Image (cartoon, rainbow, N blue to C red; front, side, top):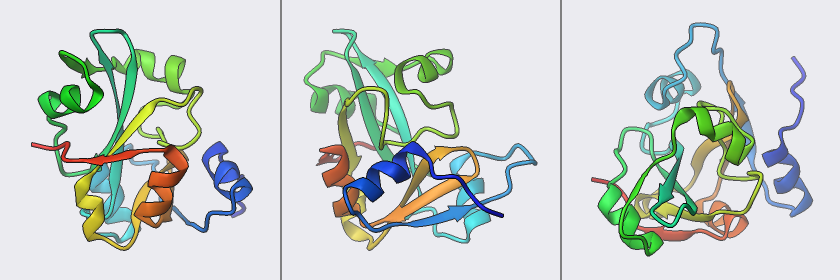
Length: 158
């Protein structure tokens, strides 16, 4: 079945970054990262989720971490230069990013937010992130994701 390109893919194409697209069936409603990794036949260590947090300053920050990991909010706040940060409420994700929960890509959000990728990405050859639509993932080199999102590599997980 033909897939339409997502905004994230169009950005990667325009900047001539190579990537692969993977799709999975989401009719069962299982769109959590571990289920997605299983469905696409990838090690959960290679599949990353995109989390959006808000600092005390009201600024938003994006963290890309392994699906099985938990974001360390203290480390996240320190990296962002904030006193503290909290997860952006699910109801606000689309308003600020243009994406919905389960289909939030670190590439191509409504605005360019300061982005951080967990340092575990340095141990893998390819990283899998959402393509910006539930059921569609993109696989690319961690360096490519870092470059396209202007991300900083940090220790972000518990």
